[in-house]
Amino acid sequence: MARIVMKFGGTSVADPERIRNVAARVKREVDAGNEVAVVVSAMAGVTNQLVAWCQELSPLHDAREYDAVVATGEQVTSGLLAIALQHIGIEARSWQGWQIPIRTDGAHGKARIDAIEGAELIRRMREIRQVAVVTGFQGVGPDHRVTTLGRGGSDTSAVALAAALAADRCDIYTDVEGVFTTDPRIVAKARKLDKITYEEMLELASVGAKVLQTRSVELAMKEKVRVQVLSSFAEAPGTLVVDEDEIVEKALVAGIAYSRDEAKITIRRVPDRPGIAAAIFGPLASAAINVDMIVQNVAADGTTDMTFTVPKADLPRAEATLAGIKEAIGYAEITADRDVAKVSVVGVGMRSHAGVASTMFRTLAEKGINIQVISTSEIKVSVLIGAEYIELAVRALHTAYGLDAA
Ligand code: ASP
Ligand code: MG
Image (cartoon, rainbow, N blue to C red; front, side):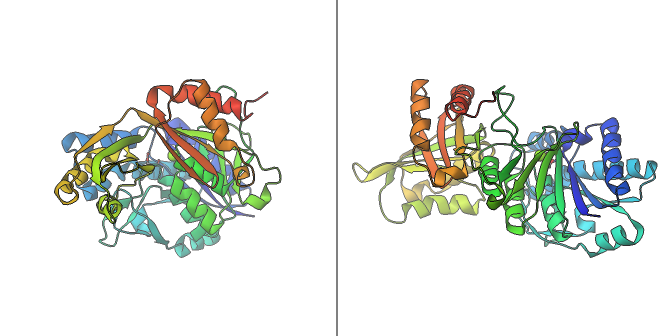
């Protein structure tokens, strides 16, 4: 007997027929004698619709009300799945974030989970073999209002629940068969990985491989939750996300990810003096805007240009924030470019092997692709390029690092 958390993404619960299919999968685990908790996303497309309605009514809407709206998607699917399970004779109960409770901080729209009260769910699993069907993506804040965890947050809900319940496994069911060397929609020769390290998965997730939310991987790594990514439409085993010492043959490059979700901001003629970076990035941080790649040019005449990227969705707020500090900082102007994309190569093997970055630069040069910004970490090299080159870049790099399937 094992205790498992099963998480189903939006496409897996997209309509009643698919919810029935999910119920059958859950039943199989229960029949095998396992204790099961399920975490569900909203039906495919629902969250997008809810977000769009908030945007339509007011682009700078109140984040508390955004949460009140978007949290409803998961409420629907948790109730529906509980009904489907009961219908096939499985004891089941739905739970919204506040009912468990899943306590979060007060950062509405991108809240973080502080604690999950697991005792009651465990008691019900043990005593009446009840399956808990938990809403992903949501919790309750210090002000007792509903919070949401940011897009894709149900993955984090699932991993946090697995940690709180001391589950043996957290199976994330999605519409792909696992984690691939790159996006198979762009590269037909992409391969499914059997295993990947937490760190590689973290880098891939943070640079746009949308299969798992970044925070869910951080949490899995911290809490040592064994995560499996697998398809709810196939029977094949998926990709296990595990500790580095579980992987014997470490690839130089595990995968190539890309993101079209970033925008580039350049602040021209910023006075070059101590404290200026803090004066720019402090207010952006206070506005909860994640700045990613940053470059500062060499100062010529006592001023410098500062270029960085922010999530596209945060661009209006970033521009508003920077406009608010124009006087105080004394820069000349801001320009923004939305037609950029980021491509990254990731692999723990980079730690011990040189030449990964130069292969990347040479490959892009051969295709005539200009690099606008570069950033690196211990196991990743990322470049910002024109959005129109992204597919070409990903394909060329996949081949250059020998990742193409035979
Ligand atoms: N429904 C939410 C979203 O689309 C959360 C999730 O599915 O993970 O972002
Ligand atoms: Mg998702």
